[in-house]
Each structure stands twice: as C-alpha cells, then as structure tokens.
Amino acid sequence: MSKMVVSDLPDSEFEGKRVFVRVDFNVPIKDGIISEDYRIRRTIPTIDYLTQRGAKVILGSHLGRPRGRVVPDLSMKPVSLRLSELLGKPVRFMEDGIRDKATVDGLQESEVMLLENLRFHREETDNNPEFSKDLASLADIYVNDAFGTSHRRHASTYGMALYFDLRLAGFLVHRELKFLTKLRDNPEHPFVVIVGGAKIKDKITALKNLIEKADKVLIGGGVAYTFLKAKGINIGGSITEDEMMDWTKDALLKYEKKIFLPIDHVVAESLEKRRTRMVVDQEIPEEFRGFDIGPKTVAKYTSEIKDTGSIFWNGPMGVFEVDDFSAGTVHIARAVALATWRGSTTVVGGGETIAAIRKAEVLDSEIIHISTGGGASLEFLGGEELPGISVLNDKKQYNNN
Image (spheres, rainbow, N blue to C red):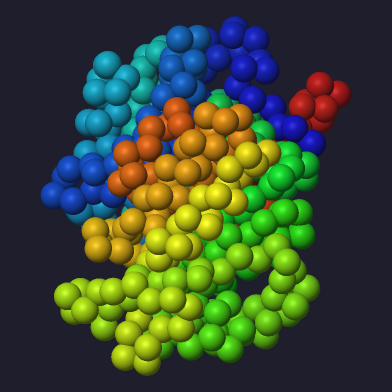
C-alpha cells in the first residue's frame, strides 16, 4: 500500500507547525571536510517544500557508530555548515536539542534546525520508549526522508513516529519506494541484475528474490569467487565465503542459464604487490588473488547490458578504489549510464556503488535512480518489511480517518 507523502497534505497543515524530519546525513567526513554530499543534497526538495509552506523544520540524523558516546569527530556540525550552503540560508545547529526544548520552541517559521548526532545517545539504537517520547515532544508532524536507515527499529526511525498522528514520507523516501517497488514486484524485461562487492551474505535476501525475476545475473567482485569456487574453478587466494557455498551451488544448479560469471581476471599477489598485476583467463594461479574482472568479462557484461528493460546494480566489480583494479567497475558504470540513454530503467544501490559511479564520472542524470538505501534497499527488494516505512500513514488509512 502506498504511503502518505508530504505533498498529500494541504499547505495550511504545515504553516507554523514543527516538523521533525528524519534524514540520513551519514556522509564521509575527514578533518571536518565532507567528501561526498549526495545524501545531503537528496533531502533538499523535502526541506524546501516544508520551509516554503511555513514549517519549522527540525532535522535529526546519525553519523557513524559512536555507540552512545560523544565522539567529536562524528559531530553533525560540518553537515550543518554544508547544508546551509546548499539551502542558501543559515541552519541552526543544536548540540543537544533533545534537552534544550526552549530553543526548539523558539524556532521561527521556515527556519531549519539540525540536531547533534542522535547516536551520541545509546537510547537511539535501543529504541528506548522514553527517549522516543522526548524526541517526539519536539514536533507536531513526523516525516521520514531517510530510506537508508528505515530498516532499523531505532527511536528516530520507528519509536518516536508512534507518538504522531501524521507520519509522512519525504520526497526521497517516496522516490525510493516508487522505483524499488517496481523492481521487486514488476520489473520491465529484459531485467538484468548486476551483483558485486565483497560478500553474498550481505545481499542474500535480495538475491533470492531478484534472481527469480531476473533474465540475467552478472556477477563480479568478491561475490564471483565464491560462485567460481562452487563450480570447481581454481581461484587462487581470492576471497570466498565458504559458509555460503551450499546456497551458491544450489543457485548455480537452478539458475545456471541466467548466471554469468567472470571469464578472465585482473590479478596480483596482493594489493601491496601490484607490480605483479596481470590478466589471466578463468583459472587463477595459487599465489595470486583476483582484484577485478578482466577485459573479456567487461566486453561480455557490457554486451549483455545493452537493450535491457531494467537494470539493478549493487556492488563494484573489484577493488575500484585502487586505480590498477578499477577498470571493470568503471566500464560497467558507463555501460549502465549508456543503457539509461537507450531507454532502460536503471537503479543503482549501495554506498560503494555510488562511489564507483563518481569514479567513472557518470552524472546523476545518467542513472534513473541512485538509491541511498544500501542495506535497506536490499532488504526491501528481498521482500522484508522495513520498520521505518511500515510505521508511516497509508494513504487509504489516513483518508478513512
């Protein structure tokens, strides 16, 4: 059932109201500098929409894993400064707005406030009822625009929402649900799924569901070596997940015709010994490890990506952060972008995959939808219920009230 979006309410519902927006500003920061602000920029439409209607906007997010401790390097302060630049106006930063309710109450119409890292409070991840109630007391309306944390039953994504009559989706969450629901339930065919990254285990729920619907499944990255080992192919010292071997063998037996595996590899003795880098066909020598798909595999995969109805890509094809092992991922990113221009519905998910797109110099406009979800998108595609989504008002439910 579709969820209520902020635009479903009359403008007057927001005027003068305090609106708590759960955002996902978990962005990479080093020495106070944000290296990738995509998640921040994606929330701007929701924030602008609310402030233009006179709402007092209170933003809450986590950053990193402080585990209930105050960690200065994980402060949201740099995020507030970057958000101010993007919005073109000041953003109030509250070091502890949860306890400083007087300042929150002093927020003016169309002003924006960002709270300090919610995970500085252990009660956030514990979904503590009292902490949830305290958070809820800050606002009149609840909005979830943090799809990437919607699979967590935390105070700011679930517990506090229960205290509101109005629990709405922001535009980012609405867009995520639109594209991911289509892929999960009714993808356009031919449907190509591209899977990479280090581990099958992290993607198993989505893989079980998507592999059924896909016409082709192109596998790279560390995931590929477990599949190749299951087929009895020598993978040298490449990483594998032996605990996933039984499932992998069953998948190969059942879906052998639609699963594509690398036919050559870029290998080296180790990441440190890159001078030994070379390309090998199929079998990897014992003293070497695979770090990227080879040029023959790139050619094969890019040909399979052409003229598709829809594409879902999660996980790089190799250790793309290292230039010597980035070619496979970069070529796949550009092939997916080209498929977009040819009319395919292209959806890319996962933080590493977004970083790979940046490395390939592919523009946001060259992919139909870039999911901020990561684990949340994989769980959703696997058919799991996301607490942060289930708690929102259904359109039908609200209309019947």
